[in-house]
Length: 528
Image (cartoon, rainbow, N blue to C red; front, side, top):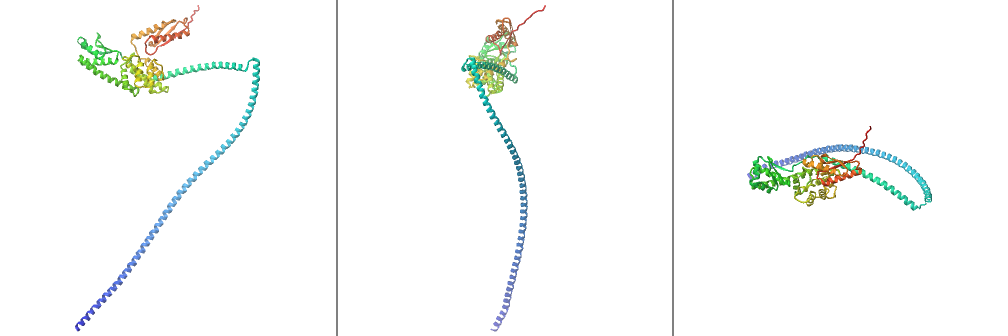
């Protein structure tokens, strides 16, 4: 026990100080921790107060900045408002000024209206007074007229109905004479104006369109290099020339004329095919019936293409669209046709442009006039194949291809064969005559020209009373001198009409012929 007790006491002695130390340490630790926590709380509170102060400071700064911005915006808006207010105030002042001026004007107008109203009232009063005076005078005049009428009836012994009838008859005769004079004067002025207007229109058309003089020969010749080639063209016993004439439908004239062979045919297209074929054969040198037939067929196809191409170019040049292909082909054929040496296609284009110019001067459709002029001689392309004159043939072709009625009538009536039903027909007639009669437009052979001049003078001198006759202006005018002792002025006019009628019936000529009859009286005496 003793040692154990001492050991126990010593052990407790050792344990208690340790426990006391631990407890003391824990207490110390507790106080330290508490102090530390309180310190942290104090620090946190201080930080919180600092942050709160910082936030409050920043909020105050933001509020001050917002207040400054708001004040600036307010000042700016107030300034803009003041400017707009001042502008509106100025506009209102201007409006007030204009209203004041308008009010002054209205006052002035009101005063003017009042003065005019007073003047009208005064005029109305004067008018009523004058009307009253006139009515009174009218009554007096009627009474005076009645008294005079009774006196006249008593003096003349006529009744009122008889006097009225005689007065009406007298007035009617006077008015009829006056109306006749007015009508004659109006007709004369209309004729003078119409002639001047027509002359101006025609001169305008001629001046605005000036084409080249076109004259083609109606005889085709082919040059040959030697007389030996003539024999080859004729062939053995004439078989080559017979084959050529059969293939082309033309007559080949081989005579003693050196260096040429003449190709003759009524159809100008056939003549052109024959001319080109013969030139090709002579150039090639191989001339026999089979070769002739091949070359003629080849040239015929080429000429047909050439004709169509010429027709298309002519329609484009004349600006006439929408033509049927057959009509375009017929236009191309006109390029091989001549009339008194004038190429018919060039003549048709010339007439087309003149018709357009004259139609536009008269307020008509220039395009339709151009179409009428281009197609007016279309019948000449086939008049050697179809019976009848070229106006009737051309009109039938146009009718077949649904051309307008104006075109059909112009084609049919441009030589006066049918009455003109549209204004385009006389335009085509005039343009046709202008194109045919202009210098260089048409020509004749010297023999035919001299014969026509002689025939014209001979025809004029066969009229009784004609002393002399002279054909001038290349046969486009004949001057006739009559015997003044046998022919008076009235008969001179009759002789001119008679000569013109006989020229139209008995002669063939291009364009027109002017007949001028001259009659003069000469008194001669000698002083001795």
